[in-house]
Amino acid sequence: EAQVTQNPRYLITVTGKKLTVTCSQNMNHEYMSWYRQDPGLGLRQIYYSMNVEVTDKGDVPEGYKVSRKEKRNFPLILESPSPNQTSLYFCASSWGTTSPAFFGQGTRLTVV
Amino acid sequence: GQQVMQIPQYQHVQEGEDFTTYCNSSTTLSNIQWYKQRPGGHPVFLIQLVKSGEVKKQKRLTFQFGEAKKNSSLHITATQTTDVGTYFCAGPGAAGNKLTFGGGTRVLVKP
Image (cartoon, rainbow over all chains, first blue to last red; front, side):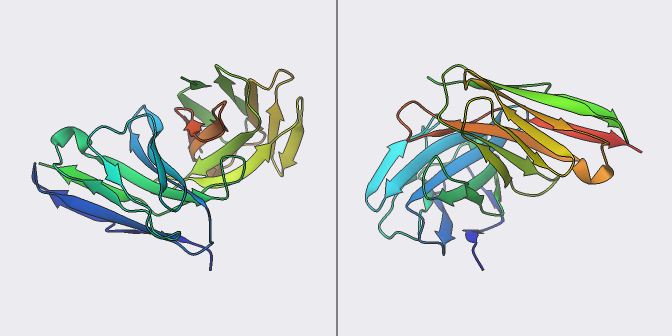
């Protein structure tokens, strides 16, 4: 079954404690991206990757890092989380921006 | 940078009525995509429009791409409770490397 898997689904952490949210897709897609969703602001792109070892900033990259060492995986790293990074995060994959995006189930992150 | 705006932000609809939600981009789009997110769920792809003036239908949903390829609309007829959710439009930037989403229209249906 074609899917995008994110883990964890829920995470509560403290300010400054490094964390990683994993994302994996089984469709051999080249394009992967991370979004955060906040009430009234829709989906805002954090980072995207057009292929292995090729990543670039989206619209709200501050405080986040990503890596793309393998085609299937695209982890999101928060080196020093802050409360303003409390949000719902989605990973997505596709063949590119002109093809449908498949989203993971989401990760609800709370930073206290 | 590119901006994608959706109106209205909220839409309260009586069951059985029709409504339309609109999407406007600050730049010309090569294509526009629509997604639906059910409450507590993740966005799910609905449809993609590519051609100027294109109209596509999915049962009670009608999607249209503007002639100038800068705007789009989603019209739902005879709204049902299953239509509840947030509808997003999205389009790629000029360089084709970023997919920008609108703020979404949250649809609430009154039975």
